[in-house]
Image 1 (cartoon, rainbow, N blue to C red):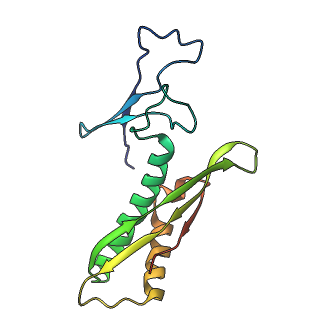
Image 2 (image 1 turned 90 degrees about the vertical axis):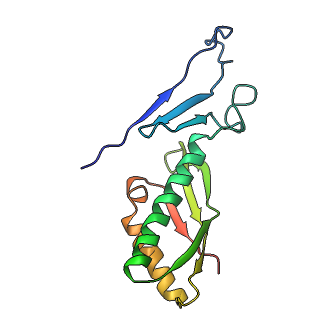
Image 3 (image 1 turned 90 degrees about the horizontal axis):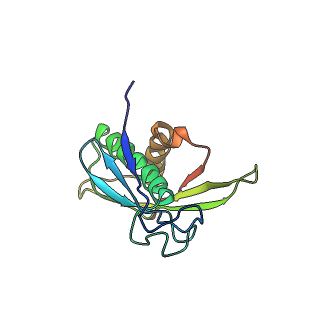
Length: 155
């Protein structure tokens, strides 16, 4: 069993009263590697100037985590079968909507990967889809959420 940690830190600015809900949502995510990411609520959720459009928001991070986890398993499965992948690009998109309980949730994530195979690597669309199916089944993040995740590779 493994554990993963992140330090999430936010501080109220001295000029903010807080209880009026007019406070900055800018915060930091710090990881065990020392990497620090500037984060914020999305401006679509909390309007400017109380959010920061240039920062990563939790919803984007959720989509990125699903896509990244899927990709890492896909690449490993391809390598196990001696299939060379030159590049993997996923233009993933998540949808925040009301779920069946009437609560806002990330209800749908579309992974749209485009794979460039090695020059001497011939892969049928059927095999590519099989690798995506296996990767989805193995993905720790996908196995941890209720969100519908669909994979539609770009040909």
